[in-house]
Image 1: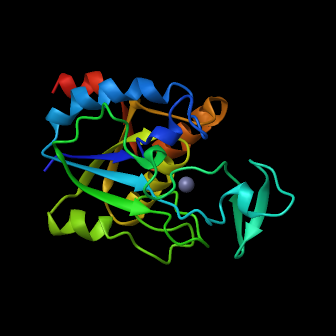
Image 2 (image 1 turned 30 degrees about the vertical axis):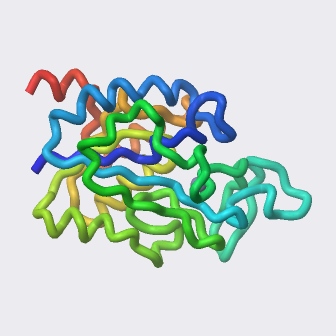
Amino acid sequence: MKTLILIDVQNDFMPGGPLPVPEGNLIVPVINQIQGYFDLVVATQDWHPKNHRSFASNHFNKKTYDSIVLHGMQQTLWPDHCIQGSSGADLHKDIEPNRIAAIFRKGMDPEIDSYSGFFDNNHQLSTGLSGYLKEKGISEVHFCGLAADICVYYSILDSILEGFSATLIEDASRPLFPDKFDDIKCELAKLGVRIITSNELRQK
Ligand SMILES: [Zn+2]
């Protein structure tokens, strides 16, 4: 079963939002074009309570993008984003929703961030995504979404740990820090991740 996982295609990560990924809006039409090539489409949604400790605003005397140690883990402090129930946490309004079979929410524990759609950053809490895919007999997953170098990247790493083979659809993703993205792509390729463009799906 060909499976597409949309990572965090949410308003707050779009240009103009509080945590904008450059050109993040440009992936929306690409994602809509490719959904039909997949038998199963699922999505993830960053879904934080207001008091989430990944927000700089919840720390005294800290700025956004500062780095702190939180429960023994390095934690970047982000602008407030994707607050539960806010319009900023909604999927982009132009994402065609009808084929999205399930949405897995993450980052709900105020103490622990969750970049990956599978597990929190401490690898203690599962979202259930791995079990959901395995129950459906899925062994190969395609990823797209935002940000390619953070939540998509960590989701891909976890998918490999969980035994899936992973493909990144590069033009259906955008990194938060484009300058460093080549290094991440090299790392993913070394791990056996296929990196393709949406055109390669169309040619099949
Ligand atoms: Zn977040």
